[in-house]
View (cartoon, rainbow, N blue to C red):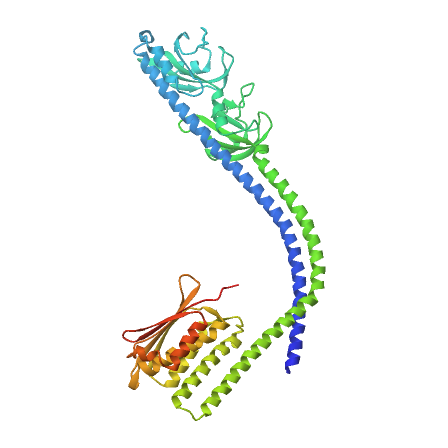
Length: 524
């Protein structure tokens, strides 16, 4: 196909490609719009699931906190009641004068303002830390009757104190001597104890801390209720506790009708179950704020993207001709550059052929030919790889060296250690000629009389990242440093090094080593 026809076909193909680009660009915006709306819905859905999961985790972890607190209250109360039992001695008549002080000291650091009572079997209170105490008969109270009838300990449901009208719950212990009931040790806690735990959990008024016995009777609750409560008919007792001693579920409260996420747990070593219930409004408030904010952001962006898609399509359509023209000009320039370097390479090959036809000194002829071949290798690398501004030096250095070794016919092994480094056009040709001169000298002078040898060639970037080092070393016999600086090749070498702004050093120790350092081009 004629070149003009190929170029025309290429322009048609580019035109189709640009049209597809316009459609694709607009489609991308539309797809992004769909992804935005679908993604927003997905994110909101995931946010809901995450919020629900967080609320459930918070509920069960809060239940763990409540259980830990009331487990400690139970253990502390048992220890306190046991100390009171020990304080009694053989009978209640033998209390020491400092017994009251001992009891006050025992509760001084306990939360919930507990009050201690030491009550005789006939219901008379022998000793108490209650500042509001008035003589009353408590033999009708379950916490007294239970231990009087043989129970070793007892935890009461929620009660209203006859002394001050506050909501309380009581833990009592049977005191007996020689198998006979002589009295009861009692510790009373204000229901405000649950408020301390509730406050620690940072609950609001829609969230509840509840402690119940395993018969469903409420022991304490915060926020407080006006009357006792039995939850034995609730889902907690009917469904969840039979399955596991701890867990999470959603329910509408039997006390106030509020929907909550409930975490529950049995308190180890007791007949108590605690719940921490988080109001759904509190739990999902962050989600509702996030959803509103997401929609407030996504909907305007969606409208903007829809408008942008339409505008972009029209604008890209108008710009298509200009882009096609620019693309065609760029391709034409690249083709011209490729053609130029190809013709330069062909011309250099022609020059090399003319040199070979000249009746001049064979050594001079070979040197000139090798220099021309080095230039050919650089231009070949440029046009074959479309590298018009930067050239990978590690790709053409072996081409130069291998051709030299082959042309001289010496038994020389070459070891390469080349890092892929790009140099600009102004450096590529001098660098190739420098390699040609150094390697030619090494092959000619380092390995006389057919001696075997080795060339080591390394090319690497220095640590500063702005300079490169080319090192060419042989293990040959070396040659006189004084003579090395007098020949035409050495003068040419010095000129080439200066041309690329570099510096070099020759060392002679068990062979010859040439080290060149030069600045790399700044990347755009």
